[in-house]
Length: 220
Image (tube, rainbow, N blue to C red):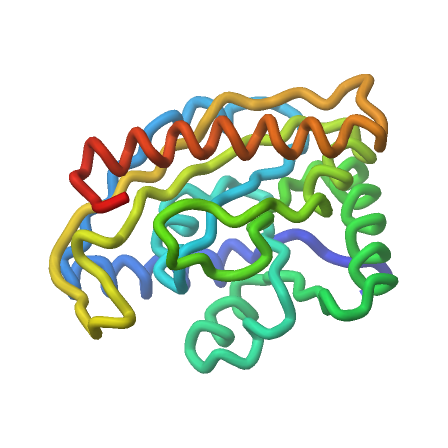
């Protein structure tokens, strides 16, 4: 390809959604979506979401907007069926150990977002987090949004603790809520504003996550 493609094939996207739909019903996981109207803006944007486990794919594919592709760490590519699903879904993998590679990917992403009207999905924690809260956010996604001068839309996936525990080898029926928060503008912001933007988004997501945990009765 002459330039990085951020367009997910509609056929591939439908196939993955079809597969995950069956996984969802097989395990009896009910997903509620809130705030979907916040995706209805006619410009590119950067989606940032908390990252708990490979189950995040269920929530992500439930709300993934058109013309959107995730960016993920390269290690995911080698995680068996999860890696295959990510690859088929058009995920762009970055090597976090090579800073220059990651910067180049983000820079090219900013250009492509604007020229091709594309959305990007990033997990700013950088790795899976089983703590029941959120790890500090890496700033790459926020630099990307500021560089492209596009909004950041936070997506919060509620805790899985009431029905899933990798440590306890437990996976029962349960419910999960995916909440899409209002867009946070970046127009007029510069690289100097990225740390404050990152923390502002993280705090908004923490408040939403804690609220969902209380509502769903998940341990905190």
